[in-house]
Image 1 (cartoon, rainbow, N blue to C red):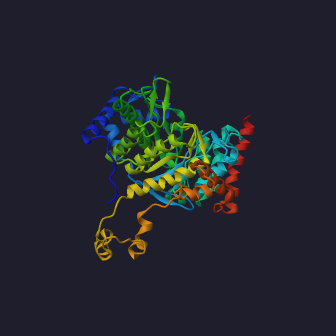
Image 2: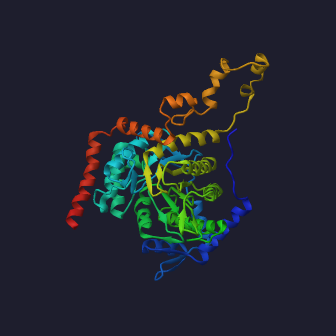
Image 3: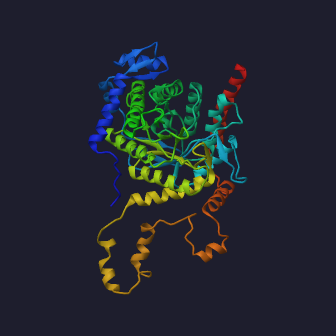
Length: 476
């Protein structure tokens, strides 16, 4: 029997938080930076103050928009086809401006080649379905989103969640995505990338997210609505109060996205919530209370029928015991909660950087939590009463056909985890997990080559990048 999701809140508690969030949207409202979005809210019945850029959203409007969100939607890259919202958890690599170099072990700024290599790592890891990019800091920032998208789509056949920095960037990325998909009509059937949209907690919808939604949602690009509340900082210190703010954040995004395009495919998340360390004034990413953000995110998503996006991280600065137990708790909460889309594989430096060996380690961790979620199958075949009685007291089952038939499905094999005897481990150099994971990462980087796009497609996409480069040079 498959393991059931863990519910942190009772149904009554969940409804109390939902109702409180709706009340906050009605009474406090939300800051909305772009006037076109304010006008949409005004026309739909919100109370809008254009001077303060505040919109107070009535409950009826919020619930109408919730009801228009699709419960599932399709994504398709050249090597992967998935339906989001069908109880399969899709894991993805984290983005970041800093990377731990696998050859030197030193932290450094990310560059264009890192985007290519990180994408190839995504392509090689069997439990990873999508990639978010390192920042290409060695190309012009204004058009780096185009360079990053080109590097990703050329180096992985999996799904992409790009950085999006401007309205023009959104349009160029969309054009490149359509080229890779074989045309706009093919793209619209099942997009190959997911758009962004982060709410600045508490209750602030800024121009960057709104601009991306206004450009991409009408084109059928699925988008995320993400908030990162800090309990005790940007929200009340109580977990319940923090949930209220966080859900008000993302519910305001639900309203705006559905007003831009009714039925637009979206995912939401409060799963990136933090806890303020009051002694150090730091927002923590890996304390045990993070489990509550992750679990309640999935509970509310299922309660309202909205696909979920999530993420988890550790406060550790390297792959050590702390990173192991903090990520294990987060990964287990996400997998058992049946989140739909999860960013967070490969994070390090307290979520401020990315790391190849961490990604290899967490690829194996996903295998483990998937096995736990799968649970235990109980039927006549697995109970094996006839076999037990046939073998009798003192027997072993190593040579039984039943063992050969079932052992691969029953037990999760290890790739980098060490299960050797002490003697064999010592003969192989007494390597710790981090060393083995780094060796595996280097092996992938030096040997894995993804299925390439056709030359014509690559050239056409690069033409979009070159066009953006010339436009930037002309402006400067």
